[in-house]
Structures are given as C-alpha cells and as structure tokens.
Image (cartoon, rainbow, N blue to C red; front, side):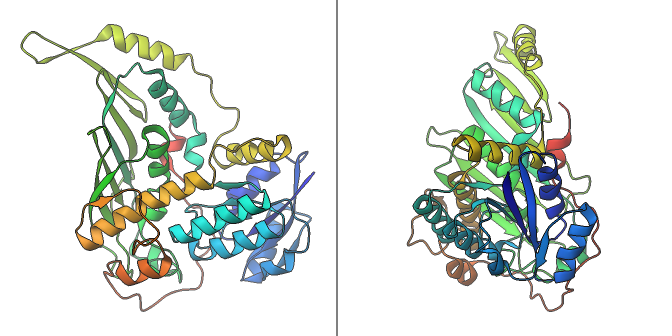
Length: 386
C-alpha cells in the first residue's frame, strides 16, 4: 500500500484526491498540506480521509511517504519536489512543471540521483480523443504532417486574476500560454515533436489587473520545413479547444474531424472517400481507455512505481513543454525569432531571467487571498467524444 501526500489543497487537489480514491487497494492518502491550514482540514473532511493535516510540507519529509502530489502555485513546485525526492518520495506535479527551465533541470537531476519517478500532469493525454488521434497519426494514414494547429481558447473574467498569486510573473509564471495552453502544447510535442524555431506575439487585452499576457499567437517551424501555430487565450467566449494536423493525405483533429482530398487534373481538390473510410475504420477499431484524466495518469504512476517501469509523462516531457512556452515568451518579449533548444545561458532559462526580461503589461496592485471553492475547468477538449 503506497502512502500518498497532497501538497496544496486548492480546487485542483480534488482531481488528485478523487483519482487516488479510485485505487484504495493500492494507495492511501495519509497527509494533506496547505499554507491555509483550514483548507487542508476542509479537504480531508470533504473526502472523508483518514489523514493528518499541516501548513508546512517540511513536517512530512520524515514520514516515509511513497508518492507526493504537488498542487501548489508553480513558483513553489521545484523546492517542494526536490525536497521530497531527496527524502525518497516519487512525485506527481500539477502543470506546469515549474516556473523555469533551471528548476525543471533541478527536479530531474534530483529524481535521477535519488532513483525516483517524476510525472507532470497532462491529463488530456489520458483521454480517448487524444489517445486515438495519436494512434491515427502514428499509423501514417494521414501522410506526412505539413501543418499543425493548436487553438487553446479559454475565457476568464477580470476577477480571475484577483487571486493573490495569479497574474504575476513571479508566482504564476505567465498567463494562458503557460497555465491553460500547457495541455495542448504537451499534446502537440507528444504527437509532432519539437520545432526548431519560434516566432510569437502576445498582449494583455482584457485583464488590467495582471502583469502577464491573456493572449498569445506563436508560429513554429520544424526541422523538415513544415509549420505550426499555437493560439493561447483567456479571452475567447465559448472556450473551444482543438488540435489539428494537416497531413499530405488527410486532415485529422481532436475533437475528431476527418477530411481527405485528392487532386483533380487541374489541381483542385476532390474528396477521397476511400481513404476517409480506411481512416475511420482504423479509428473505430481503437479501444476506449479504462480510466481517463487525472485518474488515468495516477493509475499510470502507481503502476510504474509498483512494476519499476516508466511513466507516460515524465520530467523530460514536462521540461520540453516548458521550453516551448518559454520560447514563446522570449520571442513575444524581445521580437526575436527564437532557436530551439534554449541553452543554460539564455535569459529565459532561469526564473530570475524571466522576471527581468518578460513583458509586464499591467501592475498587479490588488488581490484576494482566496476564492470560494467553486468548480474549475480542467480541459474541455479532453472531455469531448470524437
């Protein structure tokens, strides 16, 4: 029976706790920690946990905890993760992995030295739409991918950034590019690989209580010359999210949409019904996942720990995602075309470098300590059926 601790009792901790409670025969939550002690106590009572609560995670470092879920604001991830890795715990970190590439490297090095697993939450991978899209891509039926498109469209009211840590480069680390589009950027890298050039623009068009962007658009160039684009937004009504791949043979996407074309003698398109039928047949043959979302990722981590195997989303994946996001911030802040990979001497490699060089749109001069514990959205793309 693996002993589990939850660090950070905010709204997202419910997804972690709920996931662990699906596997009561494999793990037990023994502690919940939050700087606001009443939040930790309330979370324990809400879920009927037999667990201790504390306001200081360091009180748990001597408790021989097997697995820790870190659900704090991003700027705290690295310190907590490294401390628990040194104490002998495996780690799950809520997205994003950390607030800088340097911190990601510190976490991964601590995991390597101590022989422990690190998994970064990217729950949308563990959904039927994205798993099936990945399988169709890997089949090669769509042909060489010529263009990739991510639309990470969200909408957040002005008061969203009133929360004390949100909307700051120091504590949140960025706007929707980092904290909303991170799921889609992870999926894009998983399916398409890393681009070698990024050119981006960003702005804050609707939230003058935040230092960070609320809208960004990035253009990507891949080593083979093909292109991609990512739009990250907190100002889009309707909150549609999609990831689209235009292949040489067909267009496929999540949410699922399929179209295949072939050429007329004059170069204009005609529907390729035969290929569409083949791709649809392949897609329909794919099995649904047993678990989805956070629960599925927790299952993946528990299995990896007990069988000494790898996790699907490790610290390297988490770092790669943050690297692309930092490249977007760098390009948008400096106007430069950014070459990947970013090097350790890059201004956007460290947290201090980001704080010094990122564009500050507005001054955050007011805040609230906490919101009512209302339901949060964790990714509509992953919840849709294709």
